[in-house]
Length: 136
Length: 115
Image (tube, rainbow over all chains, first blue to last red):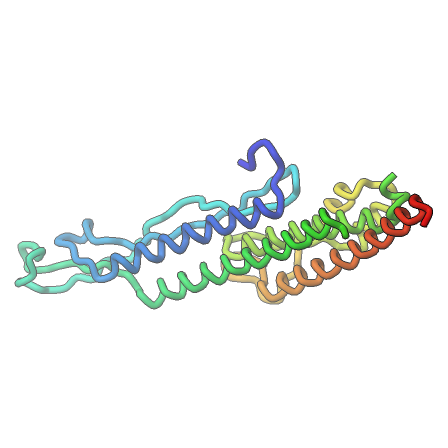
């Protein structure tokens, strides 16, 4: 997984940032689809969620993170009786996507905070490595 | 060669760099279910290197799992405050070790030039 060269601190942080971006994309997809309506339960949008897994690099002893999959949540869509809706089925029902906007905003915030932590780690490490290189 | 020139500081710099990487691993895995935070016991690593182990081996032999204050429900033991403190501590330590090495290089350079 780590490729030919052993993982470095920068590789760890970079992959971590990519993983957080996937998580942020999933949350914004959910927010974009909040309130969408479908004419059957199966066709209704279900929230997506990125699942992380540890990625251990034996050569360097470091572990980074990888996205092991983007899964659909199993939350049931909300059924609503609305006979006049253009998407209503034979019974006059429509199904709304079960997206919790508050939870998605929290997810978004958490992802961006963790992204910032990694940026901070990279910039500190970069400064130290540059000091070592120049050694004035 | 490097060990006789820089004394303990050459190994210390390598160990601190390793520790920085390990703490970054913890920060990157703050949201990974089941991830167990690790750290290097700096004292143990330094003693291992004094017994003749290379810095890399010494660092790996002194790796310990962190004992969390309150483990998450998903089995993750990363606590951001702890990791950030450890990161800052290691960064400052790295800088200190680097200044020792810098001083040593300056001394030797001056001796070589005969100033």
